[in-house]
Length: 101
Image (cartoon, rainbow, N blue to C red):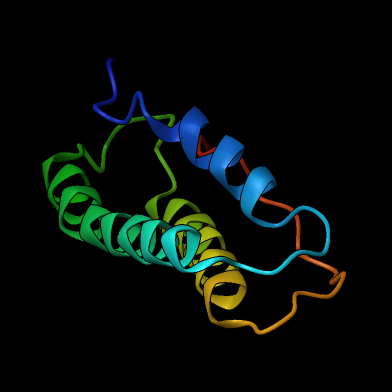
């Protein structure tokens, strides 16, 4: 079974970059991060469509709730950095990364 979410390894990369080290977002960076957060939010209808098309009788199911939570965590981290005057080191919950059960 193929999943239409080939770009999700990129989400983990973006999360690592967005949440690393203290820094201050410049205006061009802030604008780019806001666009990125918007794109992450735009994934919700795609996730919903994939879940709607999923076969609930499959033995191994894709955990769309875990995926949504990870996307939300990445988006929140991006928005937090974009909106912060000065980012300080923070603790983050790890991304699940494995969405099969």
